[in-house]
Length: 103
Image (cartoon, rainbow, N blue to C red; front, side, top):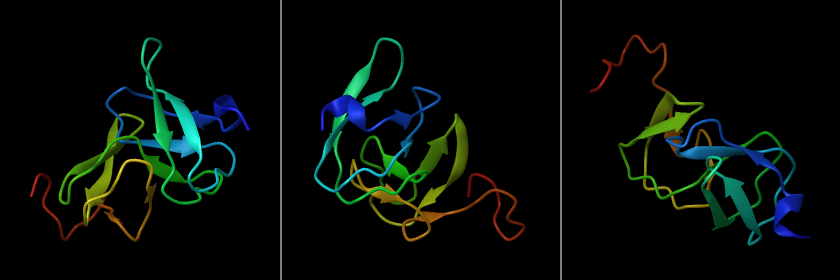
């Protein structure tokens, strides 16, 4: 498949993740349009299911993860570019009464 046959969505240039709009196989190169002027080719580290997130750049442990321009959680370990971002490597921080913002 060509690079454009795996559509993705990213809403803000500051987002750390993009969303797969169809399943993307492991080791496939995908072009993500970061903004009108910027696109980036990313090699998937693993299969990304439809509707799931993947890192558009390396994310360090403890770093906030942004989706749609909003913080959706914090990385519980280092995450590589092209890696699946989900509950195994992301801790949700929104609406948590046991966590203080900007902890």
